[in-house]
Image (cartoon, rainbow, N blue to C red):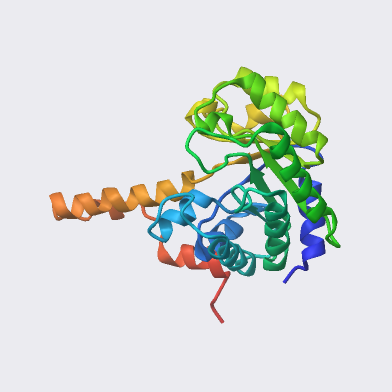
Length: 275
C-alpha cells in the first residue's frame, strides 16, 4: 500500500496545474472499480453512501462516515478525500476533531461545509470562517499535506446569491483553505465569476445547474478539480430501477444487452486473477 505521506503529496500536486476529475465512490467495490478505470484520486459522497445504507443524506453519524472512509482508503492505493459534511458539529473544535479522525482513517483530504443542518440555513459568516480555520489548523498539524476544501452551500440551501457565495469563499480562503467549492453554481458565468474572485484551486460539481459543461471547457476556464457527487451512484441505481421494471412489466432480460462482462468487472476491481 502507498503510504499516507506519498498519497498526500500526490493529491496536493494534482491541484497545482491542469484539471482532473475526482469521481465519487460509495463503497469499497466502487472505489476499486474507479481505481481500475484509471482515475488519479477519489472522493467520498455523503448522499450516495447514505442511500446505500438505507437512509437519506445528513442522517449518518460521524462514526459511520469515518468507518466508511476508512473502508474506501483500504480499498485503493489512490489518494482519498472525503465529504465530511459540516464537521458533525457546530463548534470549530468539532471540525478540527473530524479532520483528525479522518486522517486516522487514511484520508489525505476532506471538505467542511457551511450548511448548519437547518434547511435553508448556513452558519453566520464569522463562525463559518472560524470553523474552516480550525479545520485548517488540524490539517496543518499533520506530518503530510492534508488538502482542506471549504464549501459554500448557498446554491444547495436555496440562497442563490452569487455575491454572498463569493464573499464566503473569499473568507474561507483567508482562513487558509487549500481548495474552494460552491456546489450548484448555475451557469458558466457564475463559475467564471468565482474563478476570478479567488486565488485557490476551485472544485466544480458537474450537474444540471452547471450546464453539464464538458471537462475540456471547464479546464480551459481554469477549474482545477471536477467532482460528480452522487451522479455515478445514481447511474448505478437507475440501471437497477430500469432492469427491475423490465422484469416486472415484461418478464424479459433486455437490460443485459451490452452489459459489461463479469470478467472485465473482476479484472478492473482485482487485476488479472489468472495464474
